[in-house]
Length: 214
Image 1 (tube, rainbow, N blue to C red):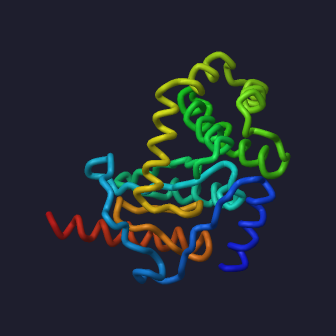
Image 2 (image 1 turned 30 degrees about the vertical axis):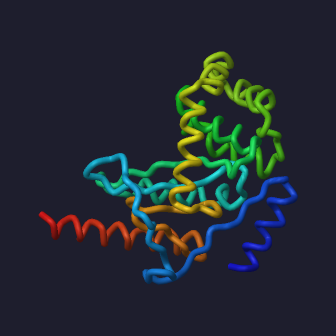
């Protein structure tokens, strides 16, 4: 994991973004597989098990994790809700790609374009960190330019970006991608597969706890 961490840090500095990789571990053991969130955070979906993914389009590991996470989400039951939280680490460029996420959510193009955003940034080396460049890019992909620009600059989108960074602070996020489960646990696994396996175990544990209270 330390090798991966060093590689990620070097990659991020090469991109001009200060970011670290979230740590993780193998078995479902506190401090190894996951850490308790202290204090526990309120969730928004009553009666659901909420999973948050803290991520950024600028993160190469988030790009690698995205298809695995999408497949994992498709296997979840109706009692699990997964929410993605783009965060900025205080960088204006990363703020723009966080706004990109929420603006595409408003225009209805997020699901269609999200895989292409990762590809554009990390394989094609497209500059999607500046407003004009990213607006040109989404317009070329068939998104209504005015509708996107209005959403991108809206108070609602800016508020969501600020809220994402506030959540990252509350969860003490130091790197991405990081998964948080039900406001109570933050996963610290080594590999993507181990992260998702630990998430499954924690979700099963929470289900069992909920069933025991009935």
